Every structure is written in C-alpha cells, then in structure tokens.
Image (cartoon, rainbow, N blue to C red):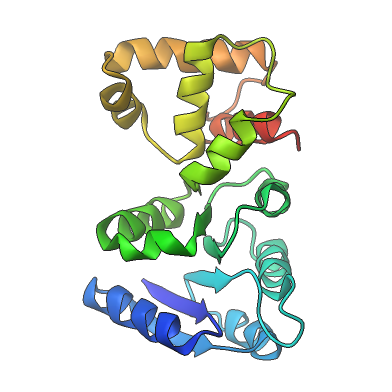
Length: 211
C-alpha cells in the first residue's frame, strides 16, 4: 500500500516509516508541516494516509482538517489519525461523512507494532477503528444510547474498535452467531435503515458518538 505520513516529531516519523516499510508498505511522502500535507495528499498514487492531528504551524488541527478535506475530494480514502490525547470531537469529525476507512488511535498504540499494523489494515479495507481509550471515554458519558442493554453496549464498543463479529465473539466468550444477533438488535434499536452491514456498523458508531 502506498502511504502518506504526516508527523512533526522526527523520531516518531522515522519510526512510522521503518515500521510500515518493514510490513511491505511504500511511503510516497513523509511530511512534518501542515502546509506540505495538502500537496502530498493530492498525489493520485497515494492509497491511504497516517496523519498526526496537530501539525505546524499552529499545532491545533491541521492533520484533522487535511483528513476531512481529502475524504471530501476522495470519498472513502483511508485515513489513520494519530493523537496524543483522547478528544472525542476529532472522532466525530472524522466519522461525520458516514463512510468507513477511518482510524483514530493514540500515539502510544504505535508501540504495539502488530496491533497498529493490523488496525491500519482494517482501515485500508474500509473499516472503522477507534482507540480503546476513546471507546472508554464515550462509554463514561452521562448520555449513553439508552435503548441498548449492557451486553449490546459491549458489542457496540468493540464494533467501534473495528472488530469483526468473530473477534467480538472471542473477546466476549460467546458464539459468533450470538454476536450477529446482538448486532442486528443494535441496528434495530438505533433505527438504522437496511443497508450493507459495513455501512450500518459505521452508522451505529456515529449514533453512539452522538454525531
């Protein structure tokens, strides 16, 4: 996969390049400044991006705005966003289009190379991956999706992390068939229209985030 990387911290940027190249990916651009990111993402050969949320010159949301912009120009373009802190609003902004191919991880997750590369692969395949700490922060809100049972919220939380039904079943020690029933009930309780399951999973996460 041909990737664009945006990270202003030189050591982390170099680490990302080494990790991703070691797993067979090609880096078409690795930038450190927000002003260079638009041109890098405009490269038609780029197939996905790994972006820091905060880049120079303002260190606020340059990476986030670039992610939203490229997905507007290229709907579904896979983007993995990295952040130093849990900020739920970023996840909401990224997911607002309703398309998949989005990941939001804390930078600490890069240290678990296998998990990071796996998450990027799920995003590149059109999945949605949210950092477990983002999931926990949303679960701790005072306004949960009231119609869901505790087990259904467990299933939805794992869906938000980008887990397949099989992976959810393994995590909850239940059968995949049971997970499938929970997922269908979640779709029904959240009043989600009939659509391909991948789209409905994204819509369920959006409803859960309060988008």
